Image (tube, rainbow, N blue to C red):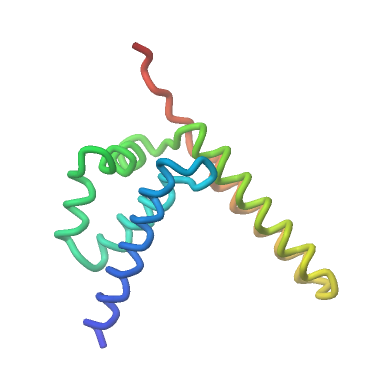
Length: 127
C-alpha cells in the first residue's frame, strides 16, 4: 500500500510538472503553482525527481525563488487570483439552487485569494 501511495504521488507530481511546463507558453495557465505542487509531491515520494526538478536550468528557478524568498512573480499572482475567481464564480453560479454552498464557494475564493496575495511580490532586477 505504501508503494502504491508513492507511485500515485509521483504520477500526480509529473502531471503537475507537465502543467507547469505548458503554463510557460500558455498565458492563462500559471507555471509557478504547478511547479510548487510538483516539488511538494516529489519531495514526499521521490528525492531523485525532486532534486532533478530543483536542478533543472529552466524549471528549478521557479521553485527555488519561492523556497528562498517566499515571493511570487506579479504575473503569477494576477493569473492565479483571476483563475480562482473565474472558476469559483462559475461554480457558484452553477450551484444556484444549493443555497449555503454558494457562500462557502465565495468564502473559499476569498480565502485562497488572500493566501496568494499574502506572499511578497518577486521583483526581477533590471538590466
